Image 1 (cartoon, rainbow, N blue to C red):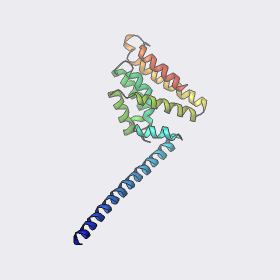
Image 2: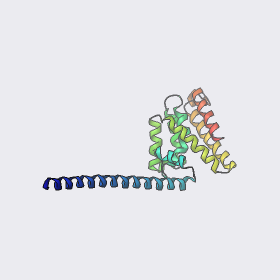
Image 3: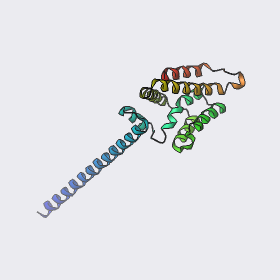
Image 4: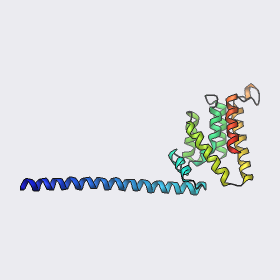
Length: 188
């Protein structure tokens, strides 16, 4: 009978431990979900976007409210990488645009831009930017969308022309032209 009591107590202790771990895991999942929901709400408030899928994609890609400004420079970065590497002149043009937009004053955003210029960003970032551009275009007045699209095209073209300045003004490579065409389609 003593052995049965010990066995029963041991079984009860194991059961209690199991349910304690399950409760801890559920509580942690709930905390993560609540944190994610708060992050999504902050990003939605900052961007004006209501598409939860887009907001989740932005969060999954590492964007938050402070770093969102850097997303505007993605087209410039992809133009800079079009020929396989970023020249010092292209880098300077992108950083100049970042400075002009106040992005260099935001540590999280400037760190992203610096990283993109140092290491080619993944194609998934380009796709995400396309979705972002579409959401922005759909959420603002057409006149403002045109102005914004023109500003993006002008800045992207400046990056494409940056490294060709010594070889003849306005020389843009075929690869850069292809990226510029993709940008034009995205902002129209």
